[in-house]
Length: 286
Image 1 (cartoon, rainbow, N blue to C red):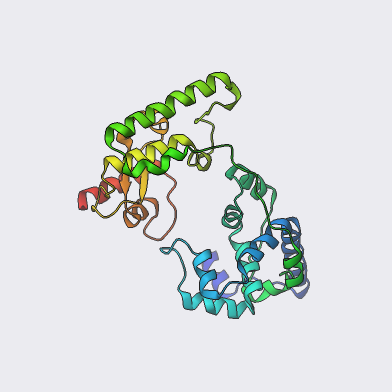
Image 2: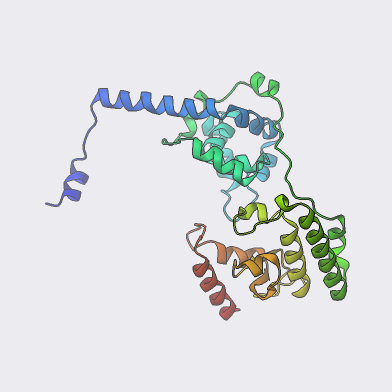
């Protein structure tokens, strides 16, 4: 008989002492997690808990493709025995996304996540044991993230209505002003090779690349011709990121972009070559 079959037929049993020890370790680890991150937990709950449940659902699950059904959401709140315990559980299970919602920079988020050890799963019906009181939430200060370094020109708002020649002139103007600024301020020079990708998406470079690509493609998805809301990178070479090579960025609608970025079972794809392969496949299907 194989070891796997033996374990399925007679799985190893923990003694009462081992179960108690494991429970104590779990309680300590989860308690430490919330005490270490209370400055983020309280503002996160304060930001959401007073809204109606339907509104909280919309705030938490912006990505409708991956959101649970609304009935499951209401069922989870009931299982957690209230909105505050549910939000406590949500914060624990979706720690990184909650920090993003507070406006922290990607670099700061990565530092916090690396320092925070999370080894145990927290059940919904146990979240109430760790959730803060309403008085504590109300007395907490609103979290204020440090402002980003990037400043976007107000001229960008008129990008939708500009002609192709105007876009080129606008890009040239921004490029020239950036060159003058960086010559005088070497420390502020963008180094896209070392810049975090989420920070790059807040930079003037991405503003120009995105707006120009959407205009070039007439705000239509290159796959299905629906209204384009996303611009997708086929390559992350330096020339592409700087906007010198616009052949490697394409306009997509949300459903087509989702097919490229996520596998059939809903997992985010990190491989650039796999994304490119999926892009070519959906282009063939049309």
